[in-house]
Image (cartoon, rainbow, N blue to C red; front, top):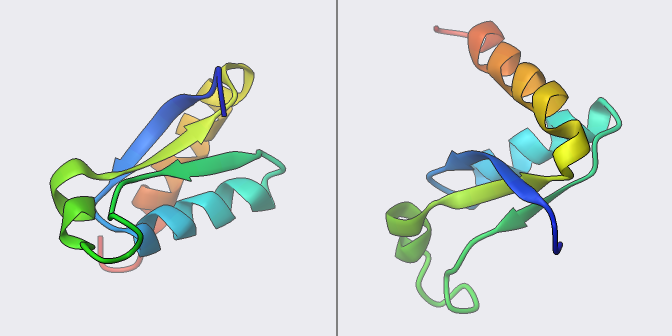
Length: 76
């Protein structure tokens, strides 16, 4: 993951995984970065956030995909 940068931060792992799946569907590799002490303290995810990391070469495309996902979400 060295060299990867954050494209978005979410309040929990589930939201991060949904963003990661959206990027994967577009062919963009991503990783999640968060601290929850081995799932023993999930509240740390809310305080520190769950970051979605991408290769800098894919940053702009990933931002566009994730921002359109937020616009297209039901109820918004």
